[in-house]
Image 1 (tube, rainbow, N blue to C red):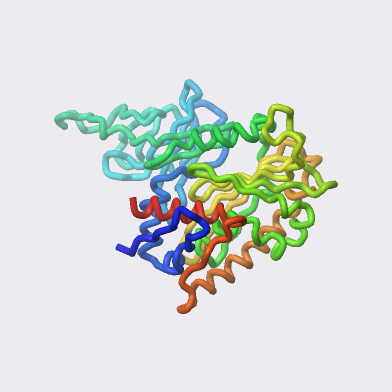
Image 2 (cartoon, rainbow, N blue to C red):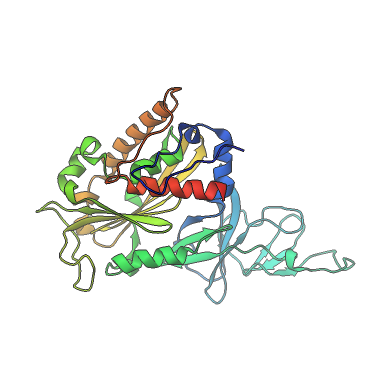
Length: 362
């Protein structure tokens, strides 16, 4: 067992996570079991499940959690999430998407309905105390938020509370008009620890130094961070003549020139709201020094694309990746242990490190 990380509650006194967190395989393995297994993960939108009696197999965080799951839409139109592993001998059930009224294992013919309930099994008439509850497929909690799907394998907090806080703030946006924009959706891979990418995302401190074009669209002096329980919000205020949200009178932000709302959900989900739509970043650990980043964009106003803070996101991403990979090399030094937080500009990073410490060792 690695030593505990004690992140002081007072940011003015706190030290960051030690460099060992970003280098240790043992800690990386603990993160998988104690953080990712107990949090919520993005599954995508519900576009592949528009029809009733449809199924969609997925592997959750392949190469890290590597959990085979199955999404179904039953005849009533309800979307369900369950294990994609047969309760007989562990064979993978659905091998690809399609339409079916039942789920039948290709190995020995065990059958389930689209809610995961056991239906039938050949050659089991002589089995005693069969079927039992454990012969049904294990179901996972699933949340469908405006057509966006999230699953918790063994969650230790309620994602609905987090999503309600987001909607309270940006509910004036046309979330019911989200349209996936595949041309804006990209995947990246970097040679760095997943948490270093999150560290970088969670502070605007670096913007004037790294993102010259983005900095020109934002009023850095007004950049703000709000800390919530399992999430936080960074607010990017627009410069005088740059594009911003049309905020209604009943919003707490009425009268402000806001260019972007950056919501982060512990541990690895990022919702970036712009006047044109949402860019969702999913940070996927692969190895101690390797991470995949999925960018998924949903648009509701194409006329505002490529403008303001939500403009050249690819350029901003590449600038961030270069910095994060440099930091990975730096934390590998024998002579770097940890750092301190800027009480003004690194509240989000302090919050993230505090949650990591809490989840790893509770």
